[in-house]
Image 1 (cartoon, rainbow, N blue to C red):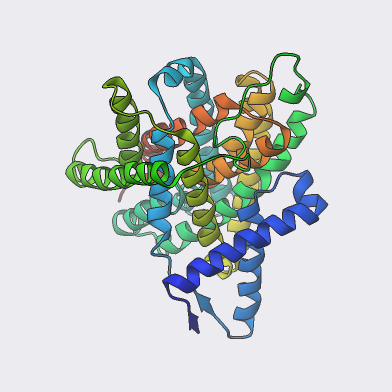
Image 2: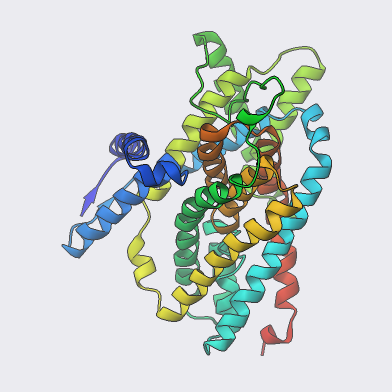
Length: 401
C-alpha cells in the first residue's frame, strides 16, 4: 500500500484537475454533455485505482485538506451573497424548495417500495433514499449508525457510504446531459437581444479577473474568519435544538460578514477574489473527493441495491426534466437549476455548483441559479430532509419491536 502525505495528495489533486481539463477539452463526448472537469479527471483516477487494487496495489490519500476546502467554498458562497440579491430570489427560492421537497418524498417512497418488492428490509430502502443521496456521506454516516443501534440493521453504515459514493459519482455525470437536453428547448443568454450582463464569479469561473496581493489577503482573511467563527458557532449549537452542520454555520457567518461590513460602511467585499478562491477550493475539494472514492465499495453492493440506486438515478433525471424544469419556468435558468438539482439531489452542493459551472461556462451566465442552489443546498435541504425522514420513520414499517 502507498500512502500519500499532505503534499503528495495536493500534487495528485492538482494533476487530477489538469487531467480533467485536458479530457473535457479533447474528448467531444465530455464537452458535449457538460461533464465537470473535476468529475472527469477524478473518476478516471478512481477507475485507475480500482484496477490497481485488482493487482493488490492500493494508494491512499491524505484527506485532511478536504473538509477545510469544502468549508472555504461555503464561506465564499456566504461572502458572495448580499441581502439585496437574496430579496430578489425570495419567490424563486420558495418554488425551488418545493421541488426539492418533492424529490425527497419521491426518493424515499421509491427506495422503500423497491426494497419491499425485492424482499429487503424497508430500512435499507430508506437508507438508499434521501438519507444518502440528498444527504451525502455525512448524513448517511449519522443515520447509518442510528439504524444499527436502534433498529439492529446490520452493515447499515457500510451501505450508507456505498450509496452516498454512488450518488456523488452519478450526480456529477447526469447533470450536464440533463441540462443539454433541456437547453435545446429554450433560448440561451447569447441569443437574447438585450445587453448581455457580466457574469458573476461562480457562473463562468474561467473569465479573466484582475487581483492584487493586498486584496487577495483581505479576502483570505474574511474566509479565515468565516471558518473560525463558523466552527465556534457550530460548537455552541452542538446538542441543542438549533444544531446545524458546520458548513451551514460557516456560510451564515460569511453572509453576516459581507452584509454587516457593507451596512456599516467599513468594507465592500471584492467579488473577483472571492470567486477565485471559491472556485479553487471547490475544484480541489471535488478532485480529492472523487480521486479518493473507493469504487470497490460499490462493487460490494448486492444486485438488489444496484437496482434501487439505478432506479433512483433515473428518477432524479426524470424529476429534473419534468418537474424541476417546469416548476422553475421552463427557461434557460430553469435548465441550469435542473442541472444543479441533479448534483445535490444525488450527491452534494459542491457537485451541484460544478454541474452548473459546466453548463454556464458553455452556454452563458445564470445569476438566479447561482443564487438559489447554494441557499437551498446549504440552508434548507438538510432541515427538510430530517423532517421527511422522521415522517417516514413514523410509518408502521419501522415500528421498533
